Length: 469
Ligand code: PHE
Image (cartoon, rainbow, N blue to C red; front, side, top):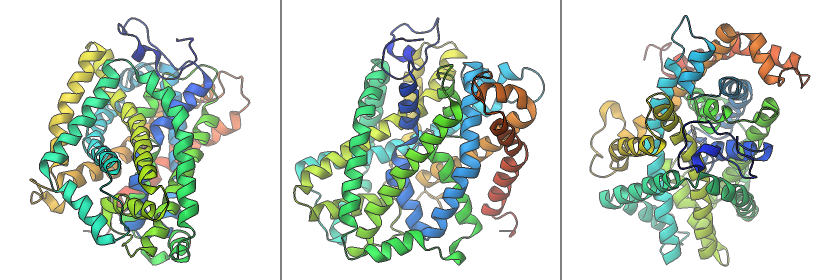
């Protein structure tokens, strides 16, 4: 265990890691790294996009309920498993339950989910990088919807730019991992995230003076019940999984680096609340602009990229602030990508015996191939839509609406039935130090019955099984 004051798995900073496992070095480091995984494009890009496309307030309400009732207990469960086993997800599940059902398959599915998510996530980060460059050279500011839409379309329909920016992103992440500067990045994230928060606050304050304010607030906070269909509920639940980085082993892996004295339920609750605040701020910064400047809330993945430049176009110094906004977004996304990469890298390293640098290179190579399908999905491969979805949309849909919830069911069942309440409670209370026995009992009951049943129901309904579609 590292004793320095910075955060991040200590082994990622050491060039010859392998013999000993690292861990986060302080309580604050644990919180920062976990928050670094949760906060990312999910808040700034996916949350507004999905809230806009799924009718607003009703979606938001279901998302909040999923986060509280399903997300939080699962996040606690994953961290507890990780910290007990102090190993990658596959080894962890094998170690805690060596016999019986093959629970370690959850780790394999998690690795697949990490690859799927990274293949489209890296493309959205690519757009963010491209926007930083555009903002710095001054080609973006305009409050004319047609013009901001045209800028975005020009980027995503150009195969060369789409691919090259994605490679830049993958090289950047690879560089951070190979040079072992993860801790440096996480230290920077710790300092810069408050700045992102402030900038969002400023944007939100400004947006709320725009004429579309009332319409935006009604859109976000006054539910139209008929818009809450089973598919909307599934999407909202999928977003809750994606946002909290659960259902695929990321939190298990980060849990394995937690300090022994960390209060798991308190940390998870703080991360959830901070993450939620960032999403809500992003929503309140974006939707007033949507209604004021005549954008449509359901503009899809382009929403953030067309509305944010329009808002900054109105603010003095908007040019610089716009560049800062996308730089901070890129940094937030980097923390999330590092945590996604950590799942396959640590599995390849600990289970398949590859050195960390080799495991990183192999992961990147796979991503260059898989990611190209997503990068080109609005240009070269725009017509390739098996089942009505582009490859980008498939990667997004399969991960959030299928793999993460299925992983969630399996993890809940594992804790509730296989691992058992006693061991789970011991982890939650730091072996009796914290008096939270009743909480452990409640969570275990939830995980045993309610969580898996609820997720299954939402998945089946959302995928149209009951309607025979
Ligand atoms: N939570 C991250 C975000 O909101 C994405 C993520 C998903 C990270 C799954 C790790 C695992 O951007």
